[in-house]
Length: 228
Ligand SMILES: [Fe+2]
Ligand SMILES: [Fe+2]
Image (tube, rainbow, N blue to C red; front, top):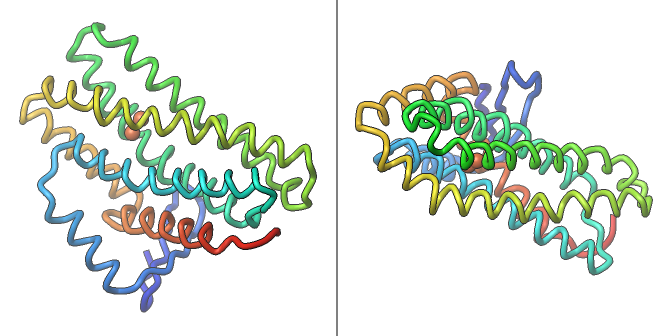
């Protein structure tokens, strides 16, 4: 990570990309403090990440409304949303769920909740497919090609709906089951695995970066007044 005044540049070797996010020093300080001081168990940490993802889904939902009403957000907005979805939602958040939490729970439950876990994994996979579809539409969308605008909408609408419901199910149904099932020692082990995963992405800055991206997308969608 390179840290300049008011600017975080987040470098992830795994993603082979450099991300530039603007945050005030106060915002960075407040958010880092919040992540540091809140008592955590593994599910509460994931719920905090859900809040960041839901904020982006709200922005995407507003962008979809703009398109439905004849105002096309700039292509750059969707490029940034695709980047957030791939980096934060899929590569970081869904990886921790699928490969760390689900794996541990499946083993503990000895097959009893394989169907539920399979459904959540399937939803992750579908979300990745919708994001791929959105990404593929963007070149033509930038040229106001009608087929590409249609392709964007036919991936955007189910992406928002499916991921919102997925997050609701995790927060209200699946995570309470996880909390009931894991011992304190298992929860600590899971948190340690999560921390190792965070380190791969630059430590706590991954949250600050994700929140910065979510805030920036919200700001961009609020500014939409006309066409591209
Ligand atoms: Fe999930
Ligand atoms: Fe999740």
